[in-house]
Length: 172
Image (tube, rainbow, N blue to C red; front, side):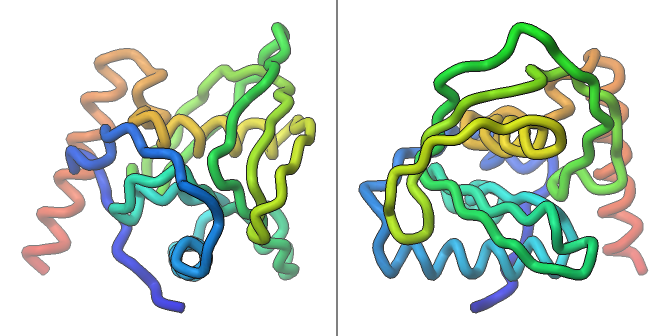
């Protein structure tokens, strides 16, 4: 496993629409393992393959590791089959938009289908932080960042903040 660089705005690759994986094989599992290692190192709770420059429909997530336990989850070719009409606001952040947080309104519950690490088809319902996180990461697969759900002014400020921080880091 290897920790990979995480792309940050305004990298144009983050706007790519990811292609479906042909299935789960050892090559994809190696990518998933690298993504998980990268997510833990960042640290974060979710990461889409495009965030490490791989335009494939794959996501890793661990909502428990901040509590000291690891419970990695893998989602290959995820799709939302149903979303509730009721929504919930949640303050989101993103490893590709570091140090920026803002409230996004999303469906409170979703029913999804995906392939797991073994390549088995799984269907399940997500709610709470799980629902927010899976929708956030699935947005990445379609070239959408959480800041794209904000007003143009907030989005522009977020990108400017990330650019400024990157320049300051280079100068240091």
